[in-house]
Image (tube, rainbow, N blue to C red; front, side, top):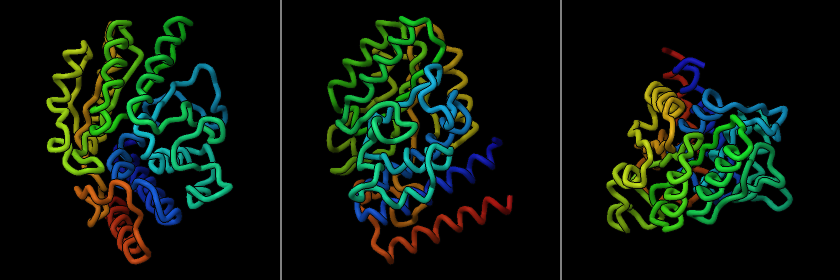
Length: 278
């Protein structure tokens, strides 16, 4: 896909996020929207995957460490062809396989169940070590929240990843600056995030998480890096492209009502129309 096509795809993924969370009347839209461009690039450009063969042993793996932003992952998987887009409105409903957090046993394309913050990156490190043991070529990607990296387990995993020289591992931090309690810098500042990962002997790349050309360059640089894992610190906007959700911590874990849903959909339609004119 070219950059314009990726932007259009990301906009459709954002629409799916809003549809799902509104239908569920619960969920986490803010961090799902901030990561939508990252999800889009990973699943439509970067990763070696096949929706028709989701358990291919040679596939690249993805672990959503910030598992509460499952609506973003589900919308991406649906638009990539793992399951019908229409199923998104079943999010969190009794009897639907799309649970509030990723479930590897029931959702096609989910490589690891997650949701307990700090633990996903550990699973990703284990997968990357397994690939090294097996002399396998697959790569492992994991997405963390910037509030999540306040968890000590993240840094235990990072220490092991560097010790093992896991150059098949890419850690992405969705740095939207907000967590459930507000500004991460005021709650328990993780800054400087890049210097911390560098101190753990990661190759570190700072990037605009909404710039597809920058994301392409960052992931290419990660592939070219040998002998150490890579951390991509992606600066993003929480609630991206929904006017009243942008940079508002209150939309970390709240669902829009019918009126708010209509505004969100209109916002995203405007984004889509603008992209179609380019």
